[in-house]
Length: 463
Ligand code: SF4
Ligand code: SF4
Image 1 (cartoon, protein in one colour):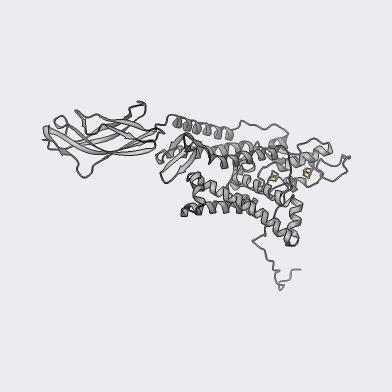
Image 2 (cartoon, rainbow, N blue to C red):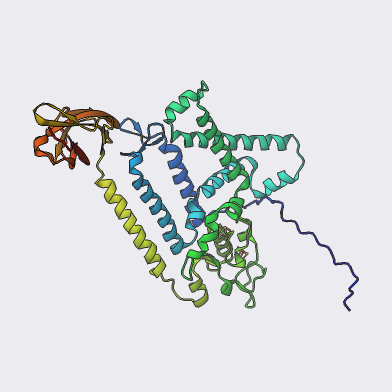
């Protein structure tokens, strides 16, 4: 009977769960090899590209001070922000396209969090040994051995993280100059801040937080499942084949058991510590380590591999084929092709020359001898080419136009400001403002030209 006088039982629930370190077991296989290639190629590019020079200039340099962005053979200016927008759009669509097609490829093989964590795990294994040794060390006494091993690991991590921060800033300040000034401690405040901030963020994220970034901080992990459908390729456990799971002797294959021998090797190698046999979980980054581990077990038992594999829900449920061409793949693919086409076209036909014409606002016009009317302009000629050029200045759309300045030399990647007097025959002009065009054209390369519309002011009472 329900006792109304009884005090309700009090239970306390902690909103905070203490983080337990995951000791993932090393494994080698097809997917681990792919991830290793990803780490080497992507981190290799990151650390090496900062040192590559093209035409005497750092190949990738976001020179914020001079507001120029050097990317390989191109120099982009703030006015070229359209390229940056298209590039970001293309990157986002590439991510959507591959997620719809093959699930969390990005998370498992290319995300900076994954690749840096991987390299920190390699360093950890190098110093502390494999997972069991690491666990034993962490659970053992903090003796001299413990201190020496931990000091070695953290020194290695910190040096690597510092180099990462230095390289990051090296993409914004020429890296050779940055390192040259490091020995005499001549870094500016922002340079010092970013080297240490980025370095410490790498040390913290890849050394300690690891999978927690994916669980609690990454927004992409949360919303990407909306891009999944029954045909998306994901890492899956073949339940029909594996269940009922159970241990057995190596030479046995009992008819009442499925192929899963419940060895837990797939769980032991998982960098996020989950059991793929429980189905699709948001913590799964799709790295494929469990598939490698399971294949290893299957081979040893003489069973067919692929109990855990990249597969789609459709294949698992209906034993059918995955449809690769489907509406969402076509949608992302078409958008991506359009954006890449636009990006390629605009980069290929980009005119590395900009012209601005600013009217002198102090004196709108001057009346000169012979009935001539004069307006004064300031032209800004930005030569975004990697060579210096001499440009000829001209106008069209004004009768008997005469210019005070006809040419301007502009160094590579420089902006030249030129005051120009422009006069016309007043008797042939109507009072008010008349539209006309400014032109600049390189003398050594007639295809390098720019134009800008402007207006010429004529007084109401003409001489
Ligand atoms: S479940 Fe498998 S694929 Fe997913 S994170 Fe763990 S090891 Fe990687
Ligand atoms: S590795 Fe394969 S056999 Fe072993 S528990 Fe995981 S799914 Fe079962």
